[in-house]
Every structure is written in structure tokens, then in C-alpha cells.
Length: 260
Image 1 (spheres, helix red, strand yellow):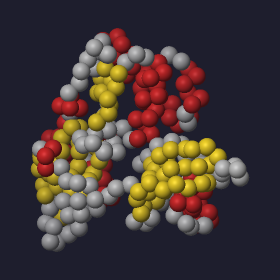
Image 2: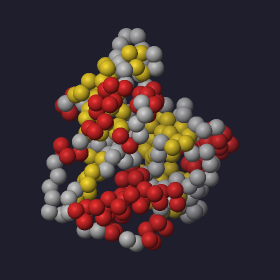
Image 3: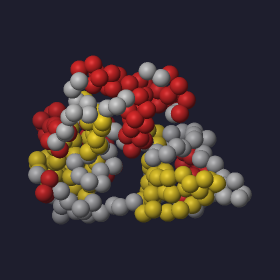
């Protein structure tokens, strides 16, 4: 395997790069497909880059529906034709007393993670405004159904649904074009949400900002392609494309934004 692959990515992404290289090796040795757990868009980008550079294998991403943000990846030899069933994804609808309570993405995610399972076992959490659904790996289906009986103080039941019952997600990324002086986390947040750098820095240092679902407390953290940033109280952004620089050396970006 090419050790130079590391230089294209961040140092904290090395364990994931090593895992991808193991998966590639497994498929090459066993000549059989390999299914990953759920990946965030940045991980999917890294996996795609490495598989293309280091092998003749094929791959397909699927997260339970067409526009899914978090997806599982099937890596397979070129003779193989995968089916959707092989991604082993279950769609749950959360049955809860809608008249008496409101659910939120954060509450649901917190409950799922506190059930003792890793984030990689869950795909997207989606809602049309009142109904809430979550996509999970089939291997943990029974465990989650047994464990998740309350969200906050509210009794809930997780019901398995067919894909034809999938809600149309209300939240859609709005694409915005912007220019930034640097890819620093505090700079990008300040620019997209029209707040001061100082305020942006305070939010980061207070632990209110996550990059790819992990708390990022360094204002000088450098963002890269397909990173997703969540800012508590403001919303989310995703670095979708980089498009060169302006005459004043500013970086042109296409950014997906979900404003609170």
C-alpha cells in the first residue's frame, strides 16, 4: 500500500485510512464484497479516493434513500453486481405521542448514542416536520428496538417500515457561494453565519461546534472538502466544492447551509 496516501489527508484521519486499506486488502484476498458501517460524507470521500488510487475494485454508496448524507459503502470485485438489499439497512419510524411532545434531531441522536451503540451504526435521522424516522444497520435492529423505549421522558416505540413509507425530509441544504480568507474553522463559521470572528471563536472554545459529529475546540482547525460543521443554535454547513481563488487571494467556496 502507498504510504504517501497519508499526505493528502489530515493526520487524525490516519486510523480511518488504515481501515480503508484493510478493507481493500480483504476484498482482493477473498474476492468477495465488503460492507462498511455508516460513513459521514468526509469519510466517503476518503474511501472513494483511496479505492480509486490503489485498486481496480468497484464501490457503491447507499444510505437507505437517494439523498442520504450518511451512507454505507459496498466495496466489491469488478465481476460483482450488488443489490440494494445487501446494504443491510433498516428503516425505523419513531412512534410517539405527537400531541404532547416535540422530538428533535439532537434528542433522538442523543438517545441512540446513549443506548451504548457507536455512531457508525446509525444513518440519517429524518423528519417531515411531525413524523421522525431513523436508518440503522440491520445487525443492531433488535438491540435498538429493545433499548430505545424512551426519548427524554416520553415513551416511544420503534416500528420497522418499508422504504415506500420513507418521509420526504423537510431539511434541505441550500447551496450558497462565498469567499473566505482561509479555511480556518472560526473564519468559515463567521463568514457563513455573519457573526464576528471573536463570537465564532467563543462558540468553538465553548464546545458548541462539531466537525463531522465530533466536538472541535480549536478555532484554527482547517476545514476540508465535504466536512460537515454543526454550530449549536445556528445550524449546519458543509464544504461542498472549492473553486480556486479571487484576485485578492480569497478562496471561492460552494457551501451547503442549513440555518436554524
